[in-house]
Image (cartoon, rainbow, N blue to C red):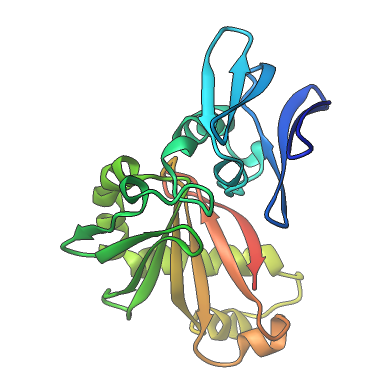
Length: 245
């Protein structure tokens, strides 16, 4: 493993490279795209330079390198490598605790989402966005100003058809947790139990629908303080469930 000042290191696991970051009490592991094979690490004015064997470079702070990206597993995403690469090259323009300059943190205004805040701690977020099924939080991951602006038309469409995404998310969650002994009545009660708490939008256009409980399903199925998120590919196909807290 190549290590730079004990803070950032490159290691290889099953022939894939990862950058391991230890910064401000946070430990993170970021998978690198196979097309960006790192051969050199160096510091450059508070930033880490990752240099690949073909001469391409990414220059980002440790905090930017530690920011999370999409969580959909590679086996479920046919464009996984492409998404890794696009996220990697976006890192230098993302707000982080060690990258909080005005050009990275200036808010963005949108007629539908209102004020989109670029915060080094809380991330890129719009609160209280109105939809036909209630207000939601919209959060962008691994996306700076230009990418957020490019994603807004897709997000507008998603918000406009949020009830359809909710139905798809809840049905996928039902199938994910089905035991085989469920009845049509229990299926119907389950489907009617959910709302949307938040949307997470990723650099690639993939997104997750974080579900809220309108009745009692969470108390029966999830530990207190936890809720499910259903992750969709950019084409709107639900493929994965995570439990958030």
